[in-house]
Length: 612
Image (tube, rainbow, N blue to C red; front, side, top):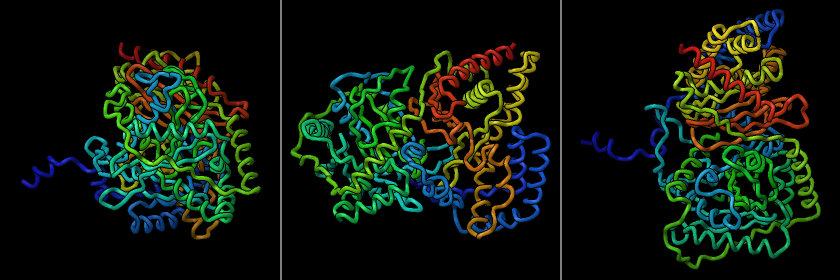
């Protein structure tokens, strides 16, 4: 009976957390052999020989010692990588994170019930905010179903970081402050922050313990908007969050030293559920071309978003929406899950509120006014200038490829994600006449607090196939055979990475142990091929499948001469957002898109002839 009962009860969001297996440590032998495979496409015979020798020495010597220490660490921690990854990938990084690290993207509502329209944005914002608060409530009450891969539960810990979370800058290293609690754990902050024209307001999203209705939220947003329209612009303190991290940390310390009340305001922003950014721009977009919205979400006005907040909900004045999120506390799939929920809720209700229009007498939003001095004003001005300069250098395009999508690819019995990845490789190869080191995100959430592993799609098999495609003497038969070999290799590597059997995080662990023990950096990491093949965050193509939903985002490229390449796959289309730096004359996002589109067509042709 008890067993039947447990089966009929709905699963709770975090119920599997403690039963998830620990993150495995691969064997040293397997990681080094995979590493050698990965550098091969970038090496001459001579270089490869030298690297093989370096790897052999590492494996026989210091590598073994470091690996033993890593295994010791893995005995005491359920996830040996977690803290290290957070520090190395995010918290110790000093470049401005709002532009370089955050992910941002367009909301898909314009594809159905909310096309761009004048005079609608506050009303729409109140409805979307209400649905977002319902999602927060699902997490609070642990009623959001735990995600699974088949029947295997996935780690849900990152979902705790979506609301009431903020990064706080430090002179050497940032920290993450998370104020979220489930109902069982205790009280959770319930206030929202609204930013508009350089000013900051806050109001509680609850009244007598009940979530405000859209008409009530609309009254609060209208109050903020009216005040901002009829009064001068604010001090724009939020712009400081777009600054280089150490600079922002020092500016923040100074801000707190002027007046303790400034610290109270910072706490209010940090602990808030999320930030609503009322933006005055109208980034006209269509279902086939989301470029303006994507660029605006990623590079837009720094005075009305808090770059360190885990979620800034951006409201554009043409009634479209976007988001900008700090990447440190969680990976994009958390936001994608919520935005997909929002999109489905809006479709189901046709974007309308069908409940009561009554508005309870809730107190108006309170403005949060910092005490500033000449130094702070100077810091703000510097932050704005550097942000605008860097933002103008980022090229972002977001287009739909509408000739075919998942259905046509699956009909050919091919994996849609691998299909896109190989087309991307070929597009780069054609444009740049050489293979590009490439990173694809692999998800390791089968494991306790697992986040990601690197999957390196630029395999020798992929390069061999690219060569056949650019060699006029090769016929379709040769090309098809090479393509299928590249598919098979990619699928194997992706499966291994998801099982925690990639090698990049393992090598990072060995590198960090050497650093922590005060040992010299092992030769393996100084080898030119290490960086040339993408190691140490040097991937030229930084890519991710954002999923099979309507939600897409983008991130800046990892390196100056690189691209960001993010995509979602639907039955009838593939939507891609690409980023590149304009100041690098070798790269151009629209050219890569054009090359990519023709590669997709050629691949489908090859796959079609294979069925004869």
